[in-house]
Every structure is written in C-alpha cells, then in structure tokens.
Length: 219
Image (tube, rainbow, N blue to C red; front, side):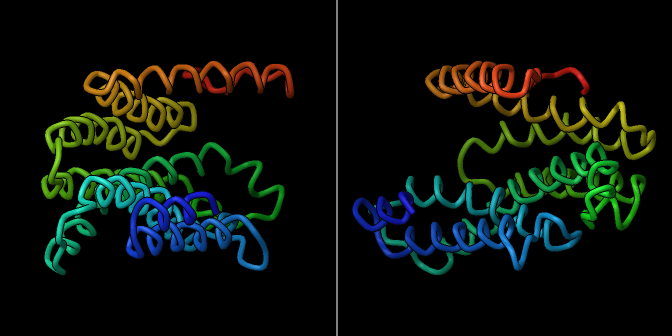
C-alpha cells in the first residue's frame, strides 16, 4: 500500500501498475482462497513474477523515470527482468526440497511434494541456466549477473546430479550471498543495510523462537 502511494506521488501510473501487480500477486501467494505458496505451479509462477520480475522492474523503471519510453524499451525491460525471475525461481525451488517433510505433513502441495526432489533439483538448475542466458540482456551491470549466474550454475548443476538434502542449503544460500556481496562492493550503503538487517533478524529469531536464523549452516 505504501509503495502504491509512493508510486503515485513521486512517479507515475506505470510505476503504480508495477506495484499494483506486485500487491495482487502477494495477496494471491499468501492468503486464501488462493494460497499459491502451497501449490506447485502457482507458487513457482508467483515467485517468478513477484519476487523476480517485479523487483527488477521497480528499480529499472525508477532509473528510467523522466525519460520518454516507447514499447520497445518497455519490452527490453520486461525481457531483462526475466533474469531475476529465473534466478529467484532456482533458489525458491531448492528451498522447497528442504521444506518437503514439513510441507507434506501440513498438506501443502509444493513443487517438490508433487514432482519429487530430483525433478525439482533439475528444474532449479535449468532455471539458473536460463537466468545466465537472460543476464546478457541486462542493460546495466550485466557482467555482475553473468558472473553470479555462472558460478551459481555450477552449484545448481552439481546439486541436480547429486540431489541430497544436505547439499541444498549451500546450493541456494551461497549464490544469494555472492550476489549480495557483488552489489555491496559497488554500493557500500546496500552492504551496510544488509548487514544491519542480518543482525536484527538474528536477534529477533533468537529472542522470539530461540532459533539461529539466518545462517549459512544447515538446519
């Protein structure tokens, strides 16, 4: 809701539409009667669009704001946003492998519950490969995403071959760390904010649940 207000006050109707689509997807992902997070295809699709494409498009359009945009430029932005869509989907799919036991016990039909660990791991690797391909269409700092996706693909491909739950954690956690570190190298403020958020989360989960999270160690 705050994003919608900001988009109208400081930007325009296009930014409003981007935020509005993100809001609708978020509602459908988390709340009944849709609860897409508990479904195989619905969860992946919502994650691809909401956490991937929309996240990229907000930043991309903010950088473009004030310039005259034609349909060709908008199409280029949408195509480039698929990079984050596939990258985030690869991570999302791998997390469903880790959570399979709990998801089954609570009646959730996530991707891994429906298709199994091996097919999920292979799909995640393919998604990471597509993220690498689409990263060549990025307009800004494409080399960062190409490097991150290439390194990540090694991890995801290895996990697809040797699909064991204990390897899932480093498969989806280290690529996220690598991308964060690369961005922080060029934007130190982002790194500082990320570190502050990391330690706040650690304190919160420890005090609230007596649980160490986030962590790079497996559960």
